[in-house]
Length: 290
Image 1 (tube, rainbow, N blue to C red):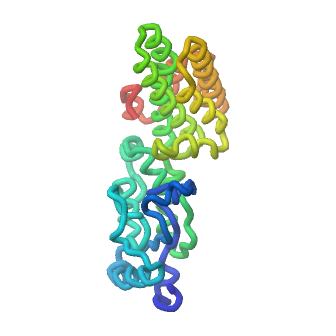
Image 2: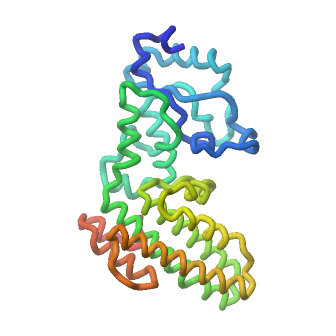
Image 3: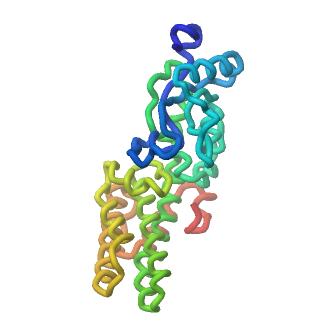
């Protein structure tokens, strides 16, 4: 269709399936057919090209797919069809391009970055879409990664190593489970940071974690913490698993030369890591920030 109807723009249009939704992460199954399901892909245009052919290309796309882009779930569009490159990235991260400041890198949710770089780009001869995609996927400043890791470590220490068992001793079973939930979320995000990957929306966090090159097996241990019972024996086992997870995280931190301490408790690792951040503004932030 592009070759026949838009030959002069064919090499300028990026095509792929990227963005919001399980189909872009490769996680679609039978249950996913309840919304935003069907044929579809993304056609990305520069702002200038959109002004010239955006309306005509959108019409041609609808004819090709037989898809009404006005029919979608209550939470937004299906994310397919014709769109400007700048609008796609703005919808994901709030920015029309890759982040340019450490503040944008630090405070934009990792799930927003994950949506911006997931899926597959089928063609992009112009390279503009892929330029931004590559910068988001690989451009996080190391000082920001260290700050995010320090924050994840301190939350893991407080929620999992300290508060989980204390809450149980107080008879606060609900609080204990909330503490474990905090530990699991922060531990998973920590593993993504150690892999230099952006962690997705919580719904896909553990599933995506199993596909990482470093520490993927920890996903099963984290899932066990959420799903196993809190009997006396179960709680004792969970506390042991928390410590084992922390030990494996410390081992990877050492492998990446991010810490040289031998502490079992993660809190001193967090402060040590933050103390080695070169950017003084980032280093001065509260240990939990990020």
